[in-house]
Image (cartoon, rainbow, N blue to C red):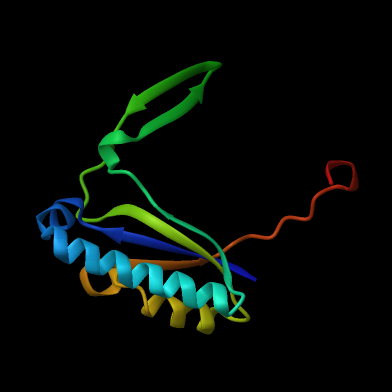
Length: 122
């Protein structure tokens, strides 16, 4: 089963880290990604640009509205993700615990809903 490891952190705190601290944290992420690949568990992953670069799209009553971010005042923002293939939620949690964000933010682990596509859509 696939699991999303959603990485949340405080963007202001991240910006307060020195260049050296951020570089070390990135090396740790790359090391975990390499281990996931070596184990055949890596599906995808990427950091996200800050929330100030985001846009939100909504359609209501046939009208599409686009709003530039950020959207909510919250302590932590979604900063990136890993999509991993794991044999159990326990295994996904073990991978999540290895991510540096667990020391300065939060990693949310969520199973990906598997949807059976109709034969015509395959």
